[in-house]
Image (cartoon, rainbow, N blue to C red; front, side):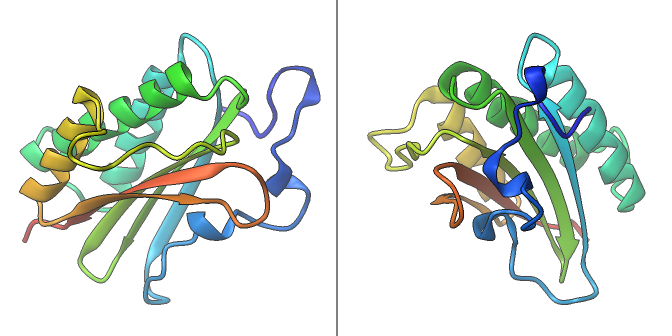
Length: 161
């Protein structure tokens, strides 16, 4: 895990100005938010899953539970989409935010094109992500980043009781 891509490339939001506004989920101050930066490449999905698994465990989500597995599945799909569709982004940020009974997974990249989240426009992977999120009282959204040409895809879940 690294904050820079090959050759010292830095995403625009890493110029000391904080994260893109779309990455900042509006949650109560008592929330916990963790972000890892990953280089795109053949190991990106595995590294993202490992990072998110550690963050979930640290947030008190029971390992090997259906919810734990669902969040890792969603993470895998979001990162796979970045690897496949965001060629302009050699680095991505994967975040996990836990607050107010919700867990949010976010994946930010430097590709400005937003995915089509309409019923007709979603591919099989994003449709599966939306269905898994809905199974846990959540949803999926995609937003342009405020301070650069990238985007963030956010998947929200209600934390199981």
